[in-house]
Amino acid sequence: MNSQIQYFNNLRALACFLVVLTHSAMPALDQSFGVFMVLISVLSSPSSELFVTMSSSLLAPTKQSQLDFYKRRFSKLLWPFLFWSVIILLILFFQQRIDFQNLIQRILLIPFKPAHGVYWFVYVIMGLYLIIPVISPWLKSCTKREHQVMLALWGATLIWPLISVVFHVNIYNVEGSYYSTWAYVGGFIGYLLLGVYLRKFPIEFKTQGRLYLFCLGLVTLGTLPIAYGYAFNRPGIHTITDNLSLSSALYVMAIFVFVQNVKFPVLLENFCNVVAKYSFGIYLIHIIVIRDIIWSLLENNRLPHPLIETPLIAVVSFFICLAVVKLISYLPKSKYIIGV
Image 1 (spheres, helix red, strand yellow):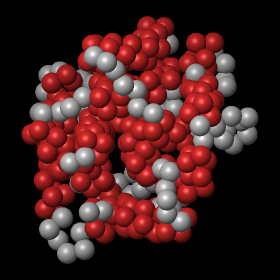
Image 2: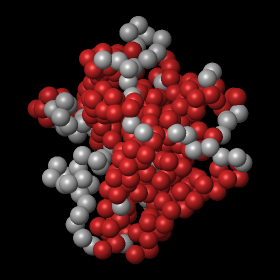
Image 3: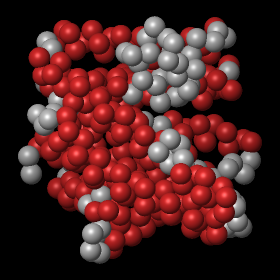
Image 4: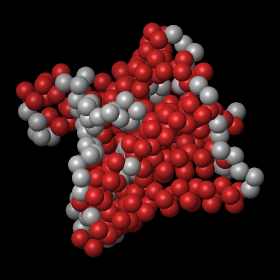
């Protein structure tokens, strides 16, 4: 397999597992476990952003026409997304967590509001799909410096969450703002620009040691704001670790650059190729497996510590999801269920 395609598959598989990990942590049994819960959250936090960065670097700039691009991308995404959105709502209905009227209402609102909170990511991806053909001519023609200018403008918006927490000023809204001067250079489009930049202008190292130091430096810089929040402003940690924060972007860049420059063992690469193929299906069903199966089984049989419990839940859930999606793939028209 082409080495470039291989590192994309490695990234996709890693991001897929991180998504599962981030939703695996059950409520803490003891307040003293708080620091470990934060640690798990930090380790898994770059998942969705890494998906955006990796996917964008593959899809943009596109050579297809606008309508052809939309037809190809949305046909692979919409039907599985709608299928599992309805399944999740039906589960809630049969669990008597919503009534019939609410069921119908939430189904009708799927074009505007996720059936489940974890599906917010699909709406982000669809928004980026819409804009990729529009910005592709610029991505093809821009110089390296011009690309860096746009990344720098986006980078400035990533500092706002930290400023808001440290100085107690309301300049950052996690829900976004249409009225901000920076609204159109901020948001998840920055991860798109970052992914394309790192693919076009990869950061290369003469030695593995320099690679490790570079990535460790990015991770350290990304962790410092989180350490500040934990020590001095714990309610602000959610803002500091927001998807559109400096910490998240630094983590994503560190992971992307590391995987881009490191060759995995052959067996691991082969496994990553399988996971990459079924990653969208795993994403769509993982919350059902974790919350409605694994959590239910552990509800009265909790493991003693989150550093044991959460990774175990993540690994077991991940392989269950992979097995289920693989089995579904043998069904006729499975592409409408899992996108493969």
